[in-house]
Length: 202
Image 1: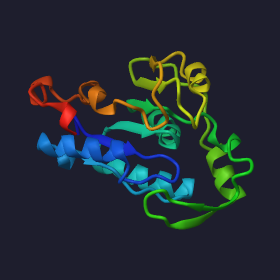
Image 2 (image 1 turned 45 degrees about the vertical axis):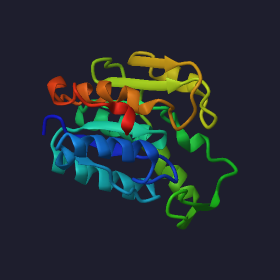
Image 3 (image 1 turned 45 degrees about the horizontal axis):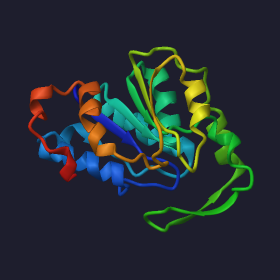
């Protein structure tokens, strides 16, 4: 479906995250809510990928918008299916970042407890692929003051893609709503549909 979007949230996040809710509000305002999916992902990568595969099948050829760990998932799926992906402060090789994090976790939005195990880490490792090289299919948005991930890792890994690196910001990506017109354009939504929209209200 042209103009459809699959938003992929990050580690211990949910559809209640600020970016997800802002994107949802904009799509509703445009009358395009039916072209957006924001699944509440299972904490286990294999389950999450299954959910995302189902959403891709439902939407056809959506733009994958992945934040943090969602960026890692989006990269795997974009390479598998030849889809476009917009990555926001994406995680690179997240399985290498979980030393010391094994054990009980809590979802930041639902407060649901779950156990991060070596099987989770192995499942993440299985999704790792070669760096993407198609600048037409990938946009990577990074902010240098990301307190969770070192933006330089993503800048190197995605160096062959269309990179937008902003000074400052944080892991949640400050100023996301100002960038939404670029996201909608990348998704294939005609500019006249949102040209009159005041994105600062979302």
